[in-house]
Amino acid sequence: MLGELLLTAGVLILLFLGWQLWWNDAIMASQQSSAASAQSAEWAEQARAEQSDTPAPAPEDYGDPVVGPAEYPNGESFAVMYVPRFDAPGTHDSVRQIAEGYGLDVLNSFETGVGHYPGTQMPGQVGNFAIAAHRSAYGGGMHEIEQFQLGDPIYIQTRDGWYTYRFRDFEYVTPDTVDVLAAVPHQPEAQPTDRIITLTTCNPLYSTAERLVAYGVLDSWRPASAGPPEEIADIVAGWED
View 1 (cartoon, rainbow, N blue to C red):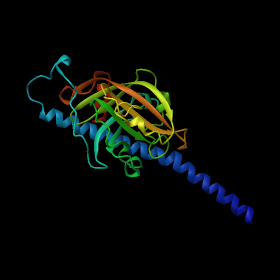
View 2 (view 1 turned 120 degrees about the vertical axis):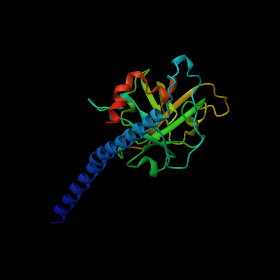
View 3 (view 1 turned 180 degrees about the vertical axis):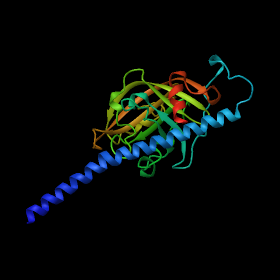
View 4 (view 1 turned 90 degrees about the vertical axis):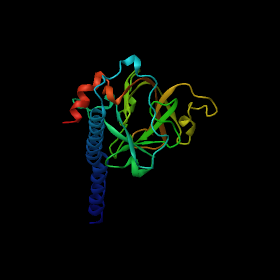
């Protein structure tokens, strides 16, 4: 009898873990994607409402990227991230909101899932725009991070516009290697000259033993009045449906 009870308990535990790591993850991923799509659509609508009869500037006239406030209240969403490489086959579901902070209130949220490290730079700013997300469970905002290929785009949208970063390199570090968040990673005393993005997540899957870090460099930016980059314009339009 005791053996049967232990066997039943073991099965229930495995079922719970399966629910937590797969079913719950899928539900949260869908909700996070829907929330981010809605935020993107709202900003697009605001940009159209604010746009005057003056045509949007030509690309050569965009100038330096507009940089938003230096910081936001903890938990406040201020950006949307879209990484085509992270899409599930046949979908465009890897869109996520980015909120200030990296606590569980952000990373385990049904609406955000990606957090910005306070004290690091903002999208488009010279220095290091550093963000974090789970690799597995709670929406897995960076589940496919190891699939990055050189030059892959990382799109960041804010109320001000679109910032396109390009993936450059990976790095595996220990959890206490916090200098990857410096304005110049690993060189906290150096003066930054590049506009970079740093994505951090746990490694390997279902473990917190290491951190997997992906770096990208800003390639271009577009003000909100110019709309999203042409290569994803149709995808973004679909978020408004």
